Image (cartoon, rainbow, N blue to C red; front, side):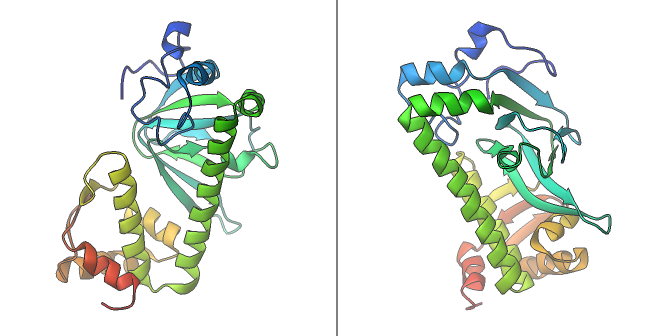
Length: 247
């Protein structure tokens, strides 16, 4: 992913100037479709590049919103605290995706963002991004596409929770991760789960025991091979068949 820097260290102007243009995730992030000149103007917006250690918060619910964050490397989860004291996982985010969009409407973050592994983010001040988006049509267009992608993903989760059985939910979750890893140049069939079974259950609206049973059944039926958090998808069509109520 390029050079790394000490936690919270301000990056020199010369490094910022090449932040987006040298990033191999730029087609998944905001710079997609920009000219070299427009890329340089976007580079100027990146105020810091920070490392977030595993288990640390990037931001917490209730904190003032002032920036969005592009994930340069690593993996995050977002969650909210329910009235009964439980944490409800609302999403998992990986390299090339944005965090912080939850704060746009109220100007305060509505959820927590926590690193599931040592990660690196680029902080982009939102007020300056808005100003630049009004000048660069392609940037505004792509930012709208990013926000639309988040809305579609939220609707997908609602479908998971509202209409699918437990095994269908887990199949959809694994297939979604496979597609997202593929878009980043990784294997579609072999990946490491950064989240726990309990966190998966919280996200999918399932009890831990139900998630564990579904994983075991998938392995018994030859859909996947599981070794702790390491997953190999052995039968993609089988998982897709579950989604279509044919398995």
